[in-house]
Image (cartoon, rainbow, N blue to C red; front, top):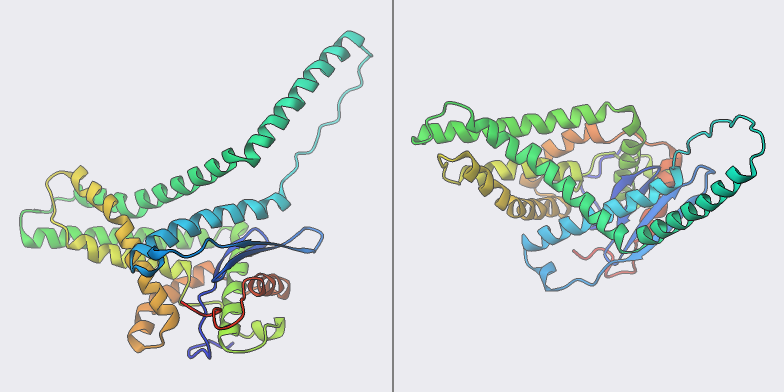
Length: 336
C-alpha cells in the first residue's frame, strides 16, 4: 500500500461518505455519485456559490465553510437515501363481502387522503424541505456542542477543584480536556463497531484513496487508486480531533468563574472561533509536508482507523466518478 507523503500536486477537493455513494466538493462544483440497487451509478452535479470577501479572511472563512458543508452534507445524504427507501411489506387483506356504501365512503376519504399527500409532497419539495435540512444541521451541531464541549465542562464543574487558585484552575482545565478527548475516542470506537456503518466507512476509505492517487499524479483508474492509503490528513475525523485540541487550548485561557452556567456559556460562544482556527490548521495540514505539520496530523490519521475501511473496486469506481465530476481545468483546479 502506498501512502502519499510527498504528493506531486495538491488539491482542495474533499468529500463525505453517503449511503452507497460519495459527495465530492471541488473548487467550483459539488458532485454526488450513488450506486443504485440495480448497479447503475447516478450523478448529481451542482455549482457552488461564488466565493466572496469572507473566503479571504482566515478563521472567519472556516466558520462559514463549516456551516455550508454541513448543509451540503445533509442534502447529499438525503439524496442518496432516496434510492434506498425501505418499503414496508403490505399485509394480505381478508376477503370481505362487497359493501357499496362502505366502498363509496372509502373512495371519498381515499381521494381526500391523496390530496393531502400531494400537498405535503409539494410542501416538502419547496421551502419546507430546506427548513428541515437547516433544522437537522442545527440539531446536529447543538448535539455535538452539548456532548463534546458543554458536558466535559459540566462534569469538571462538579469536581472539588479550588478554582480560586492557579493550581485549581489548571486541574479544572486538564480534567475538562481529558473528559473531552475520552468522549471523542469513545464515540469513534462505538461508531466504528456499528455493522450498519461498515459500507459508509468503506466509501470514506475510497474517497481518501482517490484523492491520494490524484495528488500522486497517477491516472484515476480503479487499479491505481486501490494501491493508496485509506488515511488522509485533510479529513473530517482529523478535523474533529483538532477541534478537541484547539478547544482545550482556547478554553484554558479563559478565567474560571464560580458560576457553572457562565463557564458553559463562554465555551458555547467560543465554538465558532474554535471551528475557524481548526479549519485553518486542517487546511495547512492538507497542503504542507513540513515535519511539524506531519506531527500535528499524526493523531488524526491514527483515529481514521476507526472511520475508514478498505473499499472494494465497485466503491472505488463510485469515488472516481464523483471526483472526476468536480475537476476543473488548470490553473483553477488546485487553487486554495
